[in-house]
Length: 205
Image (cartoon, rainbow, N blue to C red; front, side):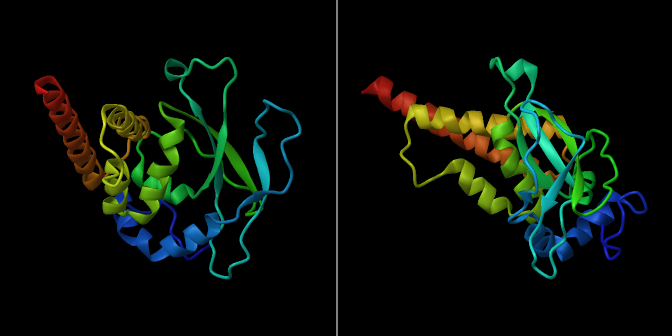
């Protein structure tokens, strides 16, 4: 990790969360265009580390770890486990999450550790990670509400499942973020209110 970024062990999480926005653009630049130098040799096998090729943007801060996200056994009925890889920065996760698995030390910026991560809703993880980087609560709330889409029972149920999955992931990771929690409550209440209104309208028709 570049020496300009303090380690999470040396200072408080609150201080790190306060200062992280100074590095957001450089870290996001480091996540863009990340490619595997070589595909895993065996299907269904997760190596301990992966060689990566990163952005050549001068100020980009390369990722420190590769998360291998898969569904919790209680939420997956698939016979084979689907694993999706997400590059990330340890300092972002450690500053916001109190229930992380142990993150091994990277050996270099080109070979980063692979961290298996079981979550209730793997498909919603990228939205959570993106929020932890950019802290754009309005964008996340608008995405979950999707006001431009048709409001009917099937679409509302899908949105409720998405919100539930996002919240489940945050709980599993122990995310510390008051605005995020408040937003989840608002969106959940709004979707339920809309769903109730549709059912009332249908019943009285």
